[in-house]
Image (cartoon, rainbow, N blue to C red):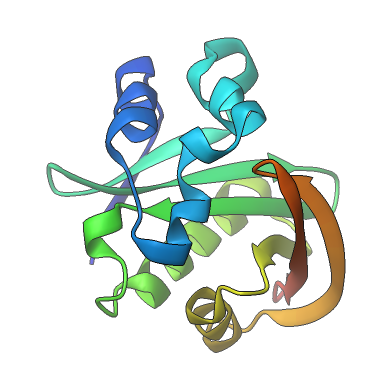
Length: 155
C-alpha cells in the first residue's frame, strides 16, 4: 500500500476532532476525551509541523504525530475509527516508522500506549517494538497506566 504523508491542515484537524469517535473502551482515544490533546490538535501553533494526515489514494486513513530529538523520534498515531480492527494496523504503523526513519534518521522510535489496548500492543510487538516500562499518567480526567515501547532502528 502506498501511503501519502502530508502536514495536517486545520480542516483535517477539525474533522478528526469532530467526527472520529471510537467504540467501547477505545473511546478513550477520542480527542474530545482529553481537553489538552484536543487543544493541541486544533491549534495550528501547537500542532506545528508534528501532525501528519495519512492518505491512501484520496482517502484519509489516519494520522501520525512525530516528536523528534537528537537520537529518537516519539510517535503517536490514530487510524480512522471505521478502519480499526480490520488487519490494516501493521502496514499503517510500518509506513509511519519508515517515514520517521527517512525524515529524521533516528537511532530509535518510541511510543506510549494505554495498557488496556492489547490490540495495539500486539501490532507494535509484531513491528519490532519492545516494552520498556509502564507508568501512570493523568489524562482524560483520570489516571491511567501506559506502556512505553521502543524500536531500535537499523543503521
